[in-house]
Amino acid sequence: MKPQNPPTEQQKNGLIEPELQHNIPVKLHDSQIPKNPINSQVSASAKDSKKSHEPDDKILQEVNKSVKEADKKPAKKSLFSFHKKQTGSKLETLKPEKIEPSKAKPPSKPVFAVVSAVIAAAVLSVAAVYAFSAKNSGAPLTSSQQSTNTDKVSSTPTQSTKITSSDLTKAASDLNSKVDSLNDAQDFNANDLSDSSLGLQ
Amino acid sequence: MKNSRSLLRIALAVFTPFLCWGSSAFAQTTPASTNTLEERVAQSKASLKLQLSAAQSQKISQKCADAQSLLKTIADKDKASADKRQQIYTDLSTKLTTNIRTLQNQNADITSLKTAQVQFDTAINRYVSDAATYKTAIDDIVAVKCASDPIGFQSLLVNTRQYRATLASDSTQIKTTAKSALVQALIATSKVLDNTQAGGSQ
Image (cartoon, rainbow over all chains, first blue to last red; front, side):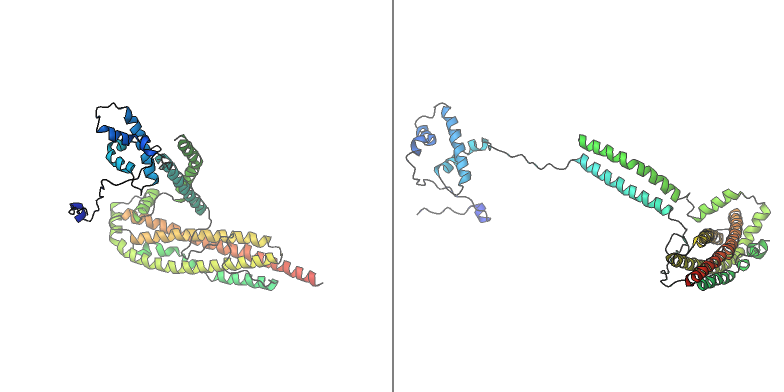
């Protein structure tokens, strides 16, 4: 049994550190052995470390393949993944084949400015139309907020009964009496505002 | 970017006329600023350009406070009579409108009535507008600091007298229109209805 390593600082803090397993027995296919330059490289590196860099290109290609395979099957631990870790520096220099550019562009500032200007102009136009229509709406407002514009609908609903000539005669009489009840001489006596009445003389 | 610029140009070309038109309409809607008492006093002084001697100014400064008390009483009385008068005018106009609509539904000839109604309502609207002007003037003369501004007080008093006289004229016009044009139109329409009913019964 392999003795367990003492807990590290990270483990004490709750972080899990991946454990490197060495000497994992991996069953290789016969076809892989001759095609695997890494193996041959590993086996040859110990013998001749002063070899040229020609196998490096092959190594890069194989590492690429291994990266792809690792992407497809990330759970499997193979010799390639082990070697992936060993050749981490080379992997870092590798770039993914495709980087899909972000299609969503942020909204440009000029478009936002144009849209806000259009909205502001529309709001101002509506306010202008409303002000103009309010100006031309007709009779002035009274203290009781009533007007006597002939185009306005009266507050009293239209009578469904017919009007006879006697009704009109009665309406004329009623009109006369109500108008006569208003005492203009009393309400608008000019003497009320004279200097003598106000004590200004 | 080019599309944004062209869109902005189009928006400006479409909305600029509305903005110009609206600003002119708004300027017409809101007349020269006379919202405060001081502004109205200044406007009254500028329009009348009264000149008072030193003696006159001193007399007004001494006696205007009592005058303002009396004016306050007159203002309250005028307000009550104006409200009552306005209510009567409104009722008369509303009843007339109802009768005209009913007669219209009966296919009666309402030409003379509508003409008289237009005259009647025009006279009432003129009175209503002048009544508001008079009310503002008499409220201003009650509120103005007359001791320190005798010319302002005197200018407002002159204006108030003018507006009161205008109100009297407006009321007379309403009475004349009601008695002559409107009553006559009602009687004429009633005769037409009589003839129509008589012709129908025969």
